[in-house]
Length: 471
Image 1 (cartoon, rainbow, N blue to C red):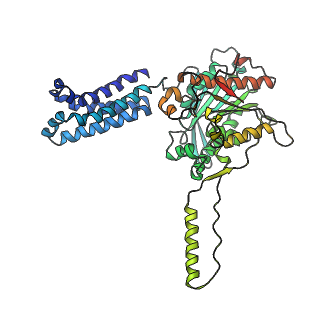
Image 2: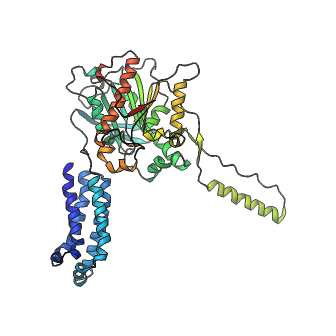
Image 3: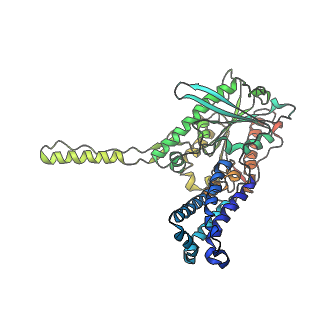
């Protein structure tokens, strides 16, 4: 992946040379420089199928496309106009040059810190085709990370990761590798037709799903989708499935120590599903849950707009006008975008849970805003249900961690991660983010296993990483 800087440099160079022609007499005689935006655009275009979606390249790509279009327009306009392009005034060259420098800076400064190709060593990948009565055929791509050199792999705790909506299983590839290296067997997946780069509706759910009722409904749909995934995955895991011909799942993991982790809508699905770790006759034991930046959209309630009382039947023209006015007022009221007015009943939890969130959660503004439902759920878990014991629940946040920083985004998509920063100074370098996330989860799992009388030694000497606040 690091070789991507070579074509990026060529794109920037081919766009730069035509722009600086007015500044240097020696370049004005080289008419061929005016053609360079065309190959620059072609190189920028092929970077996306070659390296996947690269957000930091978008400004440079758009710049190259516009510049190439201008170049084609000048060529098509005739030789004289094309020749005159070399004599454009310096004052007109400066703004495009500044924009090019900015676009190139974004491409090079937010260079990916890691290869974007999914890991293959110690990973079993295969596809499952299922037939759903409602949605029809659904295809799951399963990835299982395990240590093939472990002499007793069946002792390793199993952690099932419901991936983030933004990026799917590729956004947790390095986190999964880090968890495997710490003693877990990791299972994650993507679902065809659901896991993809989100459109405006999904992005709106993340940006204003706790403010706007329309955006909240989009988020609710995402949680329902992850709940469907959970409804498929857990029964399938209980059958001890074959891993694409490489043996069965519980040849590489323990039935008695299963943890479930979910990002955003996936974490909400784990909480809202009311999972119980003591189901009689169950073939697996769910020991703990990890909800990572889970907004719990379904807990929020939209406002109710009550129309005014209808006018009394006064009769005549005045009564008719009042009726028309009342009807128009009711119509406008129904058309008015609804907002979120508060939260409803939060789910009761009986399984130990870790809420892993941005350090924004330490600010009262966010606690009473986008984290309202999460904090209410945390309090409910600690209080316990009537007649039942309390549930162990912890909330952890790393210094300077943004909402996307517990996934691979800081190393794979540094620009997107930078657009959603935390409040404080980061606890460590951005390229250490997957290891930090895995360290927090491993600490929680080891603590739960020890409290429940299990042997946590497969996870090693797990401790809470520095720079992490837990309460």
